View 1 (cartoon, one colour):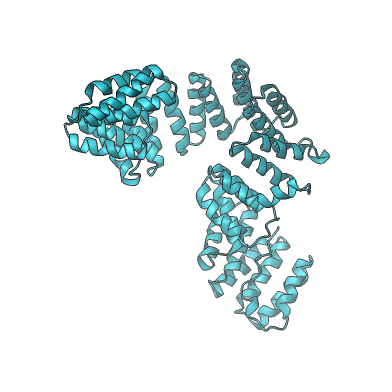
View 2 (cartoon, helix red, strand yellow; view 1 turned 120 degrees about the horizontal axis):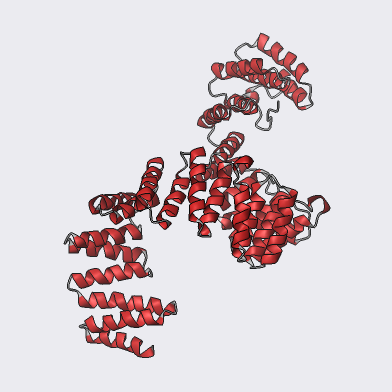
Length: 500
């Protein structure tokens, strides 16, 4: 069993400046002589039975000899003597982790950070636990504390944190964190492969697939990493981003051959095949990947379902999402994916049921609440829809889609002033959104404000022109010219029409 000693033992510094027997015991542990350390720690305990550090050192020595029950007893004794002995809490967590009891370990690490909120090791452990359970943002908070003070050139946790930044859509922060390795790589120095792969992922997420490909290739040119699957996957994605379809398929085929049991290469290969126009081949690959006999995991099923949906294979997408949900019924993202597929199939009733379940699982998710509102409105229950839009706006007052839809509902109720206020707020939140501008024009018109409607349509026409939608622009500008009563405004609209 491994117990991390980098955190040290709390309370050792409180002893006399002169080296004592516990210092010697720790040195014995570090030199692999756990049995001798145990004897020394027991001697200290015999002389000072209320020494929390002594019981902690004993616990470490016992754990390293795989005397787990006695180790736990010693560490529990340490925190019973001194509940603030946070380093003992962390070591209890490490033992629980080694025994496969990660939830119990998590609770021990939490006890440590209650006492020492900035403790690096406990925060590292908590961050990694949260990352494994999909809690990306809190995991980032803890890992940022966990890497504080570590040398910038130390990989490992910094690479883990970079991947979390990428999962959270923050590639710029990942690049900043990995900057020392990127600079070292540019200078021709040897950089650890995991750091280079993370750099490739960060550059790809930042929209620079050429730089990403260069980082992946640096890994693959090393003889010992010529078959590095993460680097091959990254290179295949980078090639796809540059529309190098053949190269991407070849690279990902190599990765799939090296790791035939890993679903990631097959999934990426299906994406490249679909993007290149080989949709049938992509579907056949996914069909094989999700066969029952392969016992695919929930993540694989979910990824395959999304790919099926992207290719318009909605029946397959629905059935695959259903299998994923059966395996992980509490995942709201699976419900969201299923709802979208059902909508594509025209089954709004079933889509509404999935969206309600999604909101039940994630009550603070504004997008989930909006989706329920939109589907309720589509089903004819406008009062219920308004309730859900209002729910969104309580926590996200600038949510333009909820503002827009609620404005139209209020207009239908004859509450024109409130409708105009909501539409104006939507316009402030999304000033270049065609849907919002169309709603704003409609409400101005219904409220008797012809010039307000004309101004909104003028802006809408300009947006259509920027999108090369000349015919749509002409229609909306003609209507704006007809309704404008202000001479200067009408002249401005007519000038735009003449330029068409």
